[in-house]
Image (cartoon, rainbow, N blue to C red):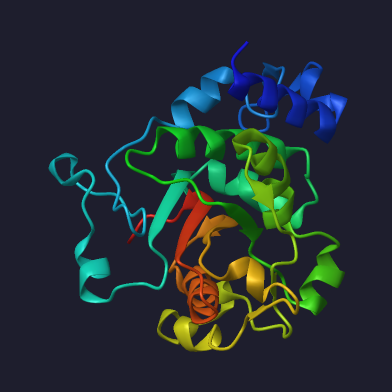
Length: 247
């Protein structure tokens, strides 16, 4: 058994034996020994296609490994992005169940998809440390968990990269980005994050991986990356389960 397979199995066992027992696929309802059956995984989580190496938006096949025009026109604070899948039907419903429905058993499966994407990403330099995108205190209290952290825990084990659950703080509850007009999303994230007290030395000169469930406009991740860069991070990469395709 490969090292990756051992880590994957260990992560699933730690997440709960339910992932190893016969169950129903959350996408098609058929029999499965994982939250998503093999057939659905093959259909809805395709292999790595050409994406912008900076923001992970899809590119034409001839542009593989390049940076898209949007990132060239306005360089983000983050340096790279790896996405496990597109945020599209039916995977969007899976994400919503994890994010709002308390379906935490889906997190290790998402982490497995994401780990494979990281290992397969051409030229991607793995970060030295992982940081889940934090929730504001009110939203965390309301939901009871941070879905980004639930993905980051098994991802840390799969990749063998140290997880720092409280590396960043989100002291205020900003309006959800999905409720904010696209033109106001960047402003909504301004001053949203802080580096945790006592962690400044851990940030300086390091390559930090930001883990999240979905990347849409990228403003949330950009604001967090800018915060880390402001406090001396050498490089920041996004590692997101799903990337919303441009419309």
